[in-house]
Image (cartoon, rainbow, N blue to C red; front, side, top):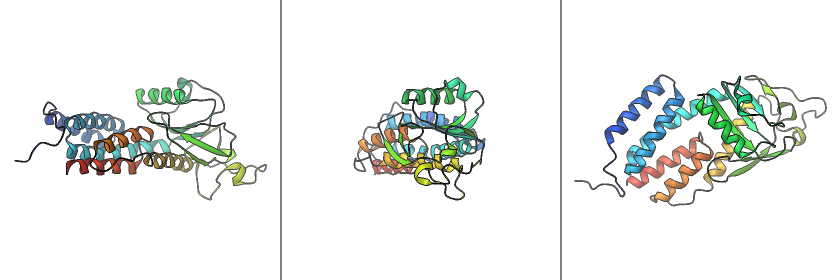
Length: 252
């Protein structure tokens, strides 16, 4: 008879995990991605408590898919790159069911956390990033607002894309004053949209988060580090995959 995995907690009921994941699967089928994500996170915590690493790894697959779909829905909504004036969460959310919002100075990490909490509470597909710089900088320091401190520097978006709400797919052309100068106005690559800029910045933050994971495979500290970094970039696909690899290594 195979022995129990290290740290195994028999008080965690596998049947309750099955029930949670059945509900998560049905939610995913119904395209209720926010509910699926919530249920997967509950199941992940229980599997971790039980040190049931094979089950933990399986939960990550529907979780990753739910988060990928949440990101895609947000990217098909309104886009705002930069906020030069402070606004309350209620103001931003009053007419935004889905979209991507990059906060810049004077907004802070506390503002981003409040807005994220309100968006989740109201069941809205909204992706948030925080840039720790004024809106008129040539480069933006994308910074975590939850989890450990992580940041990366990216070229600023074009001037004409900043501090305004843009409709899905809208791509304002550079004004005559900057004539498409990427050093002053950001990346104006043909076909690139504001949503592309936002998603690439989010990907860069997740890539930076991976660099903070240093523990070895087969060590529970690697699980802890990857979980912490997923709080920084919740929909980063490679982070989910690395976490699944780490869980499977724990099961060997």
